[in-house]
Structure formats: structure tokens, C-alpha cells
Image (cartoon, rainbow, N blue to C red; front, side, top):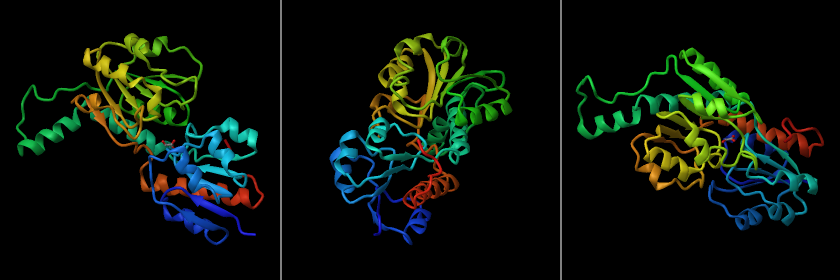
Length: 304
Ligand code: GLV
């Protein structure tokens, strides 16, 4: 019998190329706002699924299809999946770690530089005025040399950011899972978040944490939106406690808090941390290989 693999989005072609010779494929258009019901519907015939980080793979979804044997998430984060329920139901969950580390670290530096050097404000000014006059006091930002970068989450991506930041002359303080945040919050000029979203890390940066940050510090988040209490972040920016923020991820993705959009000292990009051709192709290759190996009775590359 031929297994059916459901692709819940349009992924790089390599996924189809690897899977089509072996399995029946059902490919859906990319839809980043699927409900549980939507996912239950599209996974109805799946023995295996390659899923988006925005697909809610809840217990109800996992229980709805008794044939489903593997969920291969096209992401390193698996916070969209009830991994405990999958384990109980005997459904394998896999992810795509490693190949997006450098791309995400690069974007973190892009955001860090953009917010401290006011790149987006400058771009807007040049476009709006059609001119670029040099002025001694225009768009003054903060230099990175000698500043402390606090890294919340010193895993693969956090460590790759640390390497880059040291090359910019920054003093890096990294904190690993479970370590206290006191020094990190009190001494970082820029705080960059690289932790997975779990029950423990939800709102790890809340109003209390923000209040303990250095005045005029910056916050950068390329991890997951709900790590930060977004309303509390807006309040901290409004009060001038923080000097700026640069965000790739949002608490209620794909929605973005309108308060953030109104602030010129906030840089916003649409969850593009891993969006290089190299990284996305490598993620597709891994996500498909996880399914291929598993359905052929072998161990997938990256079991969660
Ligand atoms: C992207 O956000 C990922 O988790 O891979």
C-alpha cells in the first residue's frame, strides 16, 4: 500500500521531489491562519504530515485521524504541537534543527543594527523627502562597541548570535535554561531572546522583567512572540523605559499589535528569521527526509 503524505503548505520543491516517488502527496496552499477544524479537515487522509509552525496540532487534531503516524514540523520550534499528546498516541514528531541557526542569527544582527542605528526611520525619511542632507544631530543611534548583549537562551541560535556580537566588540552575557535572569535584565544594553516557547517560558519577559531592565535598553525577539508580554512591552516603550525594540515574532501572530506599529523606534519584520533560500531548502529537505525515513521503517533525522 502507498502511504499518503499531506503537505499543509507550499514548501520548497525539494520536499515534493523527495517524497513523490514513494508516496501519494496531497499539497495544500499556504494558509498561516488555520483553525483546529481546518487542520482536522486537511489531515483527514494523512498517514504523515509536513506542517507549518502556525498549524495548531492539538490533542483533538492528533486524535481525529487514527492513521496519522508522523507530524514533521517545518520548523525547529514545536510549540504548535501537543508533543505530550502525540507521545501518548504513539505519533512521532520531528523538526528541522541546525540548518536555520546561521540564518536566524544573521537576522538577529540585522534587527539589532536596524533598531540601534535607526535604519528603517532613515529609509523612510529618504523615500518621503527624496533627499539625504548630512546633519550633525540627525538620527543619532547607539553604538554596539563595548555594549552588553544579553542573550536569553544560549542554545544553537543564541550561541551563533554571541559569535557575531563579539565580532562587533560587544560584551556578551548568555543565560541558559533555568538560570536566573537578574544580572541579564539589570545589565544588558540590548536583550535578545533565543529560547523555545514552553509553559515555563511563556511571558518570561513580562512587566516585572521589563521594569528590571536597564533604562534605554533595547529588546530584540527572533524566537517566539508569546515569550514577551506584548502589552507590557508597549507600556515600557511608551514610558521611555526601553529605547527601542526589534521584532520578528509577535504574541498573537499573524496579528501585530497596532501600538507597536505606531512607534518609530520599533522595527518589525514578518517572521523571516529562517527565510534564506539556503535555510528553507535545507529545512524542506530535512522535513521530507524525516517522513521518508520514518515511513520506510527507519529512524527519522530529528525526532522531538
Ligand atoms: C522558525 O521560527 C522555526 O521555529 O523554525
